[in-house]
Length: 519
Image 1 (cartoon, rainbow, N blue to C red):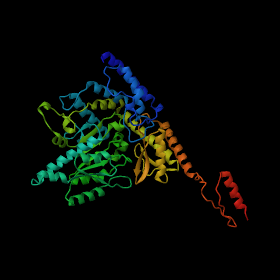
Image 2 (image 1 turned 30 degrees about the vertical axis):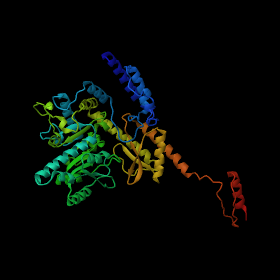
Image 3 (image 1 turned 60 degrees about the vertical axis):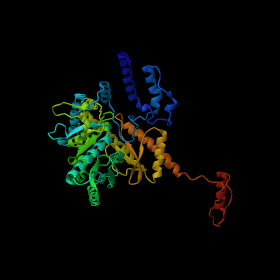
Image 4 (image 1 turned 90 degrees about the vertical axis):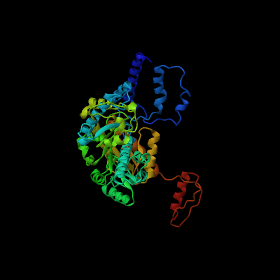
């Protein structure tokens, strides 16, 4: 492909993307295919000779789109949002066009320095303490990771190495392997699965602690567990507190957890993957009260802040814990630099890294603070409207308070009714919602996800839900079909017992009327 063809292909691809976005409502949010469908449509081997870009683009619509779940459809209400915007798409294109690998400052100075600047912009936008910023006089700073999963694991590994080194200094006669075997971490039973996975990857036991009626991890629970573990010979090392849990968007109590972690010299990591974006609005910052106690803080701009996946922002109070834990030098990585800059390869698991900061920069500049705040507030307003629709229908209940853009609701009664409703919604593919659990009750998680969502989309979703609920409840009220082999009895004043095989409903009625008329 030469420059001329690239221009043609690129323009056609941009038009295709714009058309796709404009017409998302015309597509079912879920695909109607079976596993393995694509293997039957595509050749078994790559083509020997090049094909035209028009053929490839045509096949995207013909073969790929039928197997796509449309995450940006206004009818997508599962999981949490994955952000998307035109400025971020263009930033991604230009980043791919530049094609640098920014593992060190000299590998691409703009890649590193723009990331330092945009991370400070984001940190100030969220209202984080100054000590987390790259521009602060201390060793703190921010870095872009691929996901919150990576950020949690990086925090755990840094906490692990820091704790091991501290205990080796305090107890030089202790065996390092023994120290490592005694390390233990904590999080709530509502935290994301990636938190538990980080413990497995980091060879550290991750205890899942019970939460209160609001699904919040409280200080008393953590303190009691820590004291017992210390008595049993364990070394508390790492705590992950969540602001906006996956099941219900619950918020752990940082003001209670933070002082405990600081007292026992335990690394406190905050996972605000989804809800962190809301802190661009000052009215929601009360939910991160206590953030000053944290050692690291993470949220995903790629969830709710209009930056395409992947882009996860991680700040740390003391970056030396990262660089001392992950610094592996080679002569070919030597970097002669002067001035306040970073080699971000020491802040992460991989060596190579993408130019993610470019799309963040585009979004921050082309939306501005006001545009981002408007987006967050609009999402929450839509969630409030949907919440009202649920509350206005006495067949449903919302067992836990709505938070941000997530509502957890259910049909009153047994769980099987809510499961039947979920099954119907899934089979019809008009909207996409997923199950959740609250206090051992099945709920439906409804998240406002698409930046294209409007009030009428909330009404559309509710009408679909209410209609299917009506059919389920009507079916429940219908009398069971009469089995012809069943022996029927009817009371009468002379205790006449009727025993006969019913041929049809009309005959049954005649016999019943006759029985009741006997005196």
